[in-house]
Length: 369
Ligand SMILES: *[C@@H]1O[C@H](CO)[C@@H](O)[C@H](O)[C@H]1NC(C)=O
Image: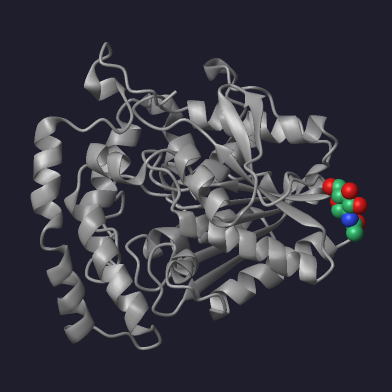
Protein backbone atom coordinates (compact mmCIF):
# COMPACT_ATOMS: atom_id res chain seq x y z
CA UNK A 1 0.00 0.00 0.00
CA UNK A 2 1.25 3.44 -0.94
CA UNK A 3 4.54 2.07 -2.25
CA UNK A 4 5.49 4.08 -5.27
CA UNK A 5 5.82 1.81 -8.28
CA UNK A 6 6.99 3.01 -11.67
CA UNK A 7 5.15 0.06 -13.23
CA UNK A 8 1.66 1.23 -12.31
CA UNK A 9 -0.13 4.15 -13.96
CA UNK A 10 0.35 7.32 -11.94
CA UNK A 11 -3.41 7.91 -11.71
CA UNK A 12 -3.84 4.70 -9.69
CA UNK A 13 -1.20 5.57 -7.12
CA UNK A 14 -1.49 7.64 -3.98
CA UNK A 15 0.48 10.85 -3.73
CA UNK A 16 2.45 10.61 -6.91
CA UNK A 17 2.63 14.05 -8.54
CA UNK A 18 3.92 14.38 -12.09
CA UNK A 19 6.93 16.53 -12.87
CA UNK A 20 4.53 19.24 -13.98
CA UNK A 21 2.62 18.92 -10.68
CA UNK A 22 5.89 19.45 -8.82
CA UNK A 23 6.91 22.47 -10.83
CA UNK A 24 3.46 24.04 -10.52
CA UNK A 25 3.39 23.30 -6.81
CA UNK A 26 6.59 25.27 -6.35
CA UNK A 27 5.10 28.32 -8.06
CA UNK A 28 1.74 27.93 -6.33
CA UNK A 29 3.37 27.93 -2.91
CA UNK A 30 5.72 30.84 -3.66
CA UNK A 31 3.16 33.52 -2.67
CA UNK A 32 2.36 31.77 0.64
CA UNK A 33 4.49 34.21 2.68
CA UNK A 34 2.49 37.04 1.14
CA UNK A 35 -0.76 35.34 2.18
CA UNK A 36 0.64 35.03 5.70
CA UNK A 37 1.73 38.67 5.93
CA UNK A 38 -1.46 39.94 4.29
CA UNK A 39 -3.73 38.02 6.64
CA UNK A 40 -1.61 39.06 9.62
CA UNK A 41 -2.02 42.72 8.67
CA UNK A 42 -5.58 42.83 7.38
CA UNK A 43 -7.58 39.98 8.90
CA UNK A 44 -8.77 39.52 12.41
CA UNK A 45 -11.35 37.46 14.23
CA UNK A 46 -14.07 38.35 16.71
CA UNK A 47 -12.97 35.67 19.11
CA UNK A 48 -10.02 34.12 17.29
CA UNK A 49 -6.38 34.83 17.94
CA UNK A 50 -4.24 36.38 15.23
CA UNK A 51 -2.32 33.12 15.06
CA UNK A 52 -5.52 31.19 14.32
CA UNK A 53 -6.66 33.71 11.72
CA UNK A 54 -3.33 33.54 9.90
CA UNK A 55 -3.34 29.75 10.10
CA UNK A 56 -6.89 29.54 8.67
CA UNK A 57 -6.06 31.85 5.77
CA UNK A 58 -2.85 29.98 4.95
CA UNK A 59 -4.62 26.64 5.10
CA UNK A 60 -7.35 28.01 2.84
CA UNK A 61 -4.76 29.17 0.35
CA UNK A 62 -2.88 25.86 0.25
CA UNK A 63 -5.88 23.52 0.26
CA UNK A 64 -7.72 25.34 -2.51
CA UNK A 65 -4.66 25.93 -4.71
CA UNK A 66 -3.09 22.49 -4.86
CA UNK A 67 -4.58 19.49 -6.64
CA UNK A 68 -5.18 16.19 -4.89
CA UNK A 69 -1.92 14.56 -6.01
CA UNK A 70 0.00 17.57 -4.76
CA UNK A 71 -1.82 17.64 -1.43
CA UNK A 72 -1.25 13.91 -0.97
CA UNK A 73 2.41 14.41 -1.74
CA UNK A 74 2.74 17.26 0.77
CA UNK A 75 0.76 15.57 3.54
CA UNK A 76 2.10 12.01 3.13
CA UNK A 77 0.21 8.91 4.17
CA UNK A 78 -1.97 8.28 7.22
CA UNK A 79 0.73 5.96 8.56
CA UNK A 80 3.39 8.57 7.93
CA UNK A 81 1.40 11.20 9.83
CA UNK A 82 0.79 8.76 12.68
CA UNK A 83 4.42 7.65 12.94
CA UNK A 84 5.64 11.26 12.96
CA UNK A 85 3.08 12.15 15.62
CA UNK A 86 4.14 9.20 17.80
CA UNK A 87 7.79 10.14 17.48
CA UNK A 88 7.12 13.75 18.39
CA UNK A 89 5.16 12.65 21.45
CA UNK A 90 7.61 9.95 22.48
CA UNK A 91 5.02 7.24 22.12
CA UNK A 92 5.66 3.87 20.54
CA UNK A 93 3.52 3.35 17.43
CA UNK A 94 0.98 0.60 18.07
CA UNK A 95 -0.41 -0.76 14.80
CA UNK A 96 -2.88 -3.60 14.70
CA UNK A 97 -4.27 -5.20 11.52
CA UNK A 98 -8.02 -5.82 11.45
CA UNK A 99 -8.47 -7.36 7.99
CA UNK A 100 -9.83 -5.75 4.81
CA UNK A 101 -6.45 -3.98 4.55
CA UNK A 102 -7.20 -1.72 7.51
CA UNK A 103 -5.27 -1.04 10.71
CA UNK A 104 -5.97 0.30 14.14
CA UNK A 105 -3.43 2.97 15.06
CA UNK A 106 -3.56 3.52 18.84
CA UNK A 107 -3.29 7.16 19.81
CA UNK A 108 -1.58 6.76 23.16
CA UNK A 109 -1.30 3.44 24.96
CA UNK A 110 -3.80 0.86 23.83
CA UNK A 111 -6.64 -0.03 26.19
CA UNK A 112 -9.89 -1.91 25.82
CA UNK A 113 -11.91 -0.57 28.71
CA UNK A 114 -13.60 2.34 26.89
CA UNK A 115 -12.67 3.07 23.30
CA UNK A 116 -13.08 6.13 21.14
CA UNK A 117 -12.90 4.97 17.54
CA UNK A 118 -11.74 7.84 15.37
CA UNK A 119 -12.52 7.90 11.63
CA UNK A 120 -10.50 10.76 10.19
CA UNK A 121 -11.52 13.25 7.53
CA UNK A 122 -9.80 14.38 4.35
CA UNK A 123 -12.45 13.78 1.69
CA UNK A 124 -11.41 10.08 1.45
CA UNK A 125 -8.45 11.55 -0.45
CA UNK A 126 -6.15 12.82 2.30
CA UNK A 127 -4.69 11.66 5.62
CA UNK A 128 -5.53 13.35 8.93
CA UNK A 129 -3.54 16.37 10.04
CA UNK A 130 -1.23 15.77 13.01
CA UNK A 131 -3.21 18.29 15.05
CA UNK A 132 -6.28 16.04 14.74
CA UNK A 133 -4.28 13.46 16.68
CA UNK A 134 -3.29 16.17 19.19
CA UNK A 135 -6.99 16.89 19.67
CA UNK A 136 -7.97 13.28 20.33
CA UNK A 137 -4.95 12.62 22.51
CA UNK A 138 -6.00 15.63 24.58
CA UNK A 139 -9.52 14.18 24.83
CA UNK A 140 -8.03 10.94 26.10
CA UNK A 141 -5.86 12.75 28.65
CA UNK A 142 -8.75 14.80 30.06
CA UNK A 143 -11.06 11.78 30.23
CA UNK A 144 -8.41 9.91 32.19
CA UNK A 145 -7.94 12.87 34.53
CA UNK A 146 -11.67 12.59 35.17
CA UNK A 147 -11.36 8.90 35.99
CA UNK A 148 -12.72 7.60 32.68
CA UNK A 149 -10.38 4.87 31.44
CA UNK A 150 -10.68 5.79 27.77
CA UNK A 151 -8.37 5.00 24.88
CA UNK A 152 -8.37 6.38 21.36
CA UNK A 153 -7.81 4.46 18.18
CA UNK A 154 -7.43 5.92 14.71
CA UNK A 155 -8.66 3.71 11.89
CA UNK A 156 -6.24 3.62 8.98
CA UNK A 157 -8.41 3.12 5.89
CA UNK A 158 -7.36 3.16 2.26
CA UNK A 159 -7.60 6.43 0.33
CA UNK A 160 -8.46 7.31 -3.26
CA UNK A 161 -7.12 6.38 -5.81
CA UNK A 162 -6.05 3.11 -4.17
CA UNK A 163 -9.60 2.40 -3.06
CA UNK A 164 -13.09 3.83 -3.49
CA UNK A 165 -16.46 3.27 -1.82
CA UNK A 166 -17.28 0.91 -0.19
CA UNK A 167 -13.70 0.04 0.86
CA UNK A 168 -13.48 2.56 3.75
CA UNK A 169 -16.87 1.32 5.01
CA UNK A 170 -15.68 -2.31 4.89
CA UNK A 171 -12.56 -1.25 6.78
CA UNK A 172 -14.47 0.72 9.42
CA UNK A 173 -16.77 -2.26 9.96
CA UNK A 174 -13.74 -4.57 10.20
CA UNK A 175 -12.25 -2.26 12.85
CA UNK A 176 -15.45 -2.32 14.93
CA UNK A 177 -15.79 -6.10 14.56
CA UNK A 178 -12.15 -6.55 15.57
CA UNK A 179 -12.65 -4.51 18.75
CA UNK A 180 -15.82 -6.45 19.58
CA UNK A 181 -13.86 -9.70 19.11
CA UNK A 182 -11.31 -8.37 21.60
CA UNK A 183 -14.16 -8.00 24.07
CA UNK A 184 -15.11 -4.31 23.74
CA UNK A 185 -18.86 -3.94 24.08
CA UNK A 186 -20.46 -1.26 21.85
CA UNK A 187 -21.71 0.30 25.09
CA UNK A 188 -18.05 1.05 25.77
CA UNK A 189 -17.47 2.47 22.29
CA UNK A 190 -17.98 5.98 20.99
CA UNK A 191 -17.57 6.41 17.27
CA UNK A 192 -16.28 9.80 16.18
CA UNK A 193 -15.44 11.29 12.81
CA UNK A 194 -14.68 14.66 11.28
CA UNK A 195 -15.64 15.73 7.77
CA UNK A 196 -15.30 12.64 5.52
CA UNK A 197 -14.77 10.64 8.71
CA UNK A 198 -18.16 11.94 9.85
CA UNK A 199 -19.52 10.82 6.50
CA UNK A 200 -17.99 7.38 7.14
CA UNK A 201 -19.66 7.25 10.55
CA UNK A 202 -23.01 7.84 8.81
CA UNK A 203 -22.12 5.07 6.33
CA UNK A 204 -21.68 2.69 9.27
CA UNK A 205 -25.08 3.70 10.67
CA UNK A 206 -26.66 3.36 7.22
CA UNK A 207 -25.11 -0.11 6.85
CA UNK A 208 -26.64 -1.12 10.19
CA UNK A 209 -30.05 0.07 8.98
CA UNK A 210 -29.78 -1.03 5.35
CA UNK A 211 -27.11 -3.78 5.21
CA UNK A 212 -25.02 -3.46 2.07
CA UNK A 213 -24.73 -7.16 1.40
CA UNK A 214 -24.59 -6.69 -2.36
CA UNK A 215 -21.24 -4.92 -2.01
CA UNK A 216 -19.78 -7.57 0.30
CA UNK A 217 -19.49 -5.19 3.20
CA UNK A 218 -18.96 -7.42 6.24
CA UNK A 219 -22.03 -7.82 8.41
CA UNK A 220 -22.14 -5.71 11.54
CA UNK A 221 -24.20 -7.19 14.31
CA UNK A 222 -24.16 -5.18 17.53
CA UNK A 223 -24.98 -6.96 20.78
CA UNK A 224 -25.92 -3.52 22.16
CA UNK A 225 -26.08 -0.02 20.70
CA UNK A 226 -22.98 2.16 20.48
CA UNK A 227 -22.81 4.41 23.51
CA UNK A 228 -22.22 7.47 21.36
CA UNK A 229 -21.62 8.86 17.93
CA UNK A 230 -20.00 12.26 17.44
CA UNK A 231 -19.65 13.82 14.01
CA UNK A 232 -17.71 17.04 13.58
CA UNK A 233 -18.45 19.03 10.42
CA UNK A 234 -19.70 15.85 8.71
CA UNK A 235 -19.52 15.82 4.91
CA UNK A 236 -23.22 15.14 4.31
CA UNK A 237 -23.55 16.81 0.91
CA UNK A 238 -21.04 16.15 -1.89
CA UNK A 239 -22.76 17.87 -4.79
CA UNK A 240 -24.41 21.03 -3.45
CA UNK A 241 -27.81 19.35 -3.74
CA UNK A 242 -29.84 22.32 -2.52
CA UNK A 243 -27.46 25.05 -3.72
CA UNK A 244 -27.01 26.31 -0.17
CA UNK A 245 -23.37 25.29 0.21
CA UNK A 246 -22.01 28.83 0.07
CA UNK A 247 -22.56 29.82 3.70
CA UNK A 248 -18.80 29.98 4.31
CA UNK A 249 -17.50 30.80 0.89
CA UNK A 250 -15.44 33.76 2.16
CA UNK A 251 -14.54 32.44 5.57
CA UNK A 252 -14.16 28.66 5.42
CA UNK A 253 -10.89 26.96 4.50
CA UNK A 254 -12.84 24.85 2.01
CA UNK A 255 -14.57 26.66 -0.83
CA UNK A 256 -17.66 25.37 -2.62
CA UNK A 257 -15.53 24.62 -5.66
CA UNK A 258 -13.13 22.43 -3.70
CA UNK A 259 -15.92 20.66 -1.83
CA UNK A 260 -17.87 19.83 -4.99
CA UNK A 261 -14.76 18.92 -6.97
CA UNK A 262 -13.70 16.44 -4.29
CA UNK A 263 -17.35 15.38 -4.05
CA UNK A 264 -17.53 14.45 -7.70
CA UNK A 265 -14.27 12.48 -7.39
CA UNK A 266 -15.79 10.46 -4.55
CA UNK A 267 -19.34 10.13 -5.85
CA UNK A 268 -18.39 9.60 -9.50
CA UNK A 269 -17.70 5.86 -9.26
CA UNK A 270 -20.62 5.17 -6.87
CA UNK A 271 -23.62 3.54 -8.50
CA UNK A 272 -26.92 5.42 -8.25
CA UNK A 273 -28.44 2.79 -5.96
CA UNK A 274 -25.67 3.33 -3.40
CA UNK A 275 -25.64 7.11 -3.49
CA UNK A 276 -27.56 7.53 -0.22
CA UNK A 277 -24.79 5.75 1.70
CA UNK A 278 -22.21 8.28 0.52
CA UNK A 279 -24.35 11.41 0.41
CA UNK A 280 -26.82 11.16 3.29
CA UNK A 281 -28.58 14.43 2.48
CA UNK A 282 -29.73 13.00 -0.82
CA UNK A 283 -31.49 10.10 0.93
CA UNK A 284 -35.24 9.88 1.48
CA UNK A 285 -36.80 11.41 4.61
CA UNK A 286 -37.07 8.06 6.37
CA UNK A 287 -33.50 6.86 5.69
CA UNK A 288 -32.65 7.08 9.42
CA UNK A 289 -35.83 5.37 10.66
CA UNK A 290 -34.77 2.93 13.37
CA UNK A 291 -31.32 4.44 13.97
CA UNK A 292 -32.07 4.89 17.68
CA UNK A 293 -31.68 1.12 18.07
CA UNK A 294 -27.99 1.36 17.15
CA UNK A 295 -26.71 4.33 19.12
CA UNK A 296 -27.70 5.86 22.46
CA UNK A 297 -26.46 9.43 22.03
CA UNK A 298 -25.51 11.54 19.03
CA UNK A 299 -23.62 14.83 18.84
CA UNK A 300 -23.25 16.86 15.68
CA UNK A 301 -21.17 20.04 15.51
CA UNK A 302 -20.74 22.57 12.71
CA UNK A 303 -19.30 26.03 12.28
CA UNK A 304 -21.45 29.11 11.73
CA UNK A 305 -18.99 30.23 9.03
CA UNK A 306 -18.44 26.97 7.15
CA UNK A 307 -19.78 26.01 3.75
CA UNK A 308 -21.41 22.84 5.04
CA UNK A 309 -23.36 24.64 7.78
CA UNK A 310 -26.81 24.62 6.14
CA UNK A 311 -26.37 21.02 5.06
CA UNK A 312 -25.33 19.87 8.52
CA UNK A 313 -28.36 21.64 10.02
CA UNK A 314 -30.52 19.92 7.40
CA UNK A 315 -28.92 16.56 8.21
CA UNK A 316 -29.60 17.05 11.92
CA UNK A 317 -33.22 18.02 11.39
CA UNK A 318 -33.87 14.84 9.38
CA UNK A 319 -31.90 12.62 11.75
CA UNK A 320 -33.60 14.19 14.75
CA UNK A 321 -36.97 12.82 13.58
CA UNK A 322 -35.70 9.34 14.36
CA UNK A 323 -33.47 9.92 17.36
CA UNK A 324 -34.42 11.59 20.63
CA UNK A 325 -30.83 12.25 21.77
CA UNK A 326 -29.29 13.90 18.71
CA UNK A 327 -27.80 17.22 19.69
CA UNK A 328 -26.63 19.88 17.26
CA UNK A 329 -24.12 22.59 18.19
CA UNK A 330 -23.31 25.36 15.72
CA UNK A 331 -20.17 27.18 16.80
CA UNK A 332 -20.07 30.95 16.54
CA UNK A 333 -17.32 32.06 14.14
CA UNK A 334 -16.53 28.40 13.53
CA UNK A 335 -15.26 27.08 10.21
CA UNK A 336 -14.86 23.51 8.96
CA UNK A 337 -13.45 21.25 11.70
CA UNK A 338 -12.98 24.30 13.88
CA UNK A 339 -12.23 22.61 17.22
CA UNK A 340 -9.44 20.61 15.54
CA UNK A 341 -7.90 23.71 13.94
CA UNK A 342 -7.45 25.25 17.40
CA UNK A 343 -4.94 22.51 18.12
CA UNK A 344 -2.85 23.59 15.14
CA UNK A 345 -2.09 26.76 17.07
CA UNK A 346 -1.85 25.14 20.49
CA UNK A 347 -5.26 26.24 21.80
CA UNK A 348 -6.85 23.54 23.91
CA UNK A 349 -9.52 25.31 25.89
CA UNK A 350 -12.02 26.43 23.23
CA UNK A 351 -15.61 26.33 24.48
CA UNK A 352 -16.71 23.86 21.79
CA UNK A 353 -13.73 21.64 22.62
CA UNK A 354 -14.77 21.65 26.26
CA UNK A 355 -18.35 20.87 25.30
CA UNK A 356 -17.22 17.91 23.17
CA UNK A 357 -15.01 16.53 25.94
CA UNK A 358 -17.83 16.89 28.49
CA UNK A 359 -20.22 15.16 26.10
CA UNK A 360 -17.83 12.23 25.55
CA UNK A 361 -17.14 12.00 29.29
CA UNK A 362 -20.83 11.79 30.16
CA UNK A 363 -21.32 9.04 27.59
CA UNK A 364 -18.72 6.82 29.23
CA UNK A 365 -19.97 7.65 32.73
CA UNK A 366 -23.55 6.63 32.00
CA UNK A 367 -24.44 3.12 33.14
CA UNK A 368 -24.34 0.69 30.23
CA UNK A 369 -27.65 -0.78 29.12
C1 LIG B 1 -7.98 0.60 32.33
O1 LIG B 1 -8.18 -0.37 31.33
C2 LIG B 1 -7.17 -1.32 31.19
C3 LIG B 1 -7.57 -2.29 30.12
O2 LIG B 1 -7.75 -1.68 28.93
C4 LIG B 1 -6.96 -2.08 32.49
O3 LIG B 1 -5.84 -2.93 32.35
C5 LIG B 1 -6.73 -1.10 33.62
O4 LIG B 1 -6.69 -1.81 34.82
C6 LIG B 1 -7.86 -0.09 33.66
N1 LIG B 1 -7.58 0.89 34.69
C7 LIG B 1 -8.50 1.27 35.57
C8 LIG B 1 -8.07 2.31 36.57
O5 LIG B 1 -9.62 0.78 35.61
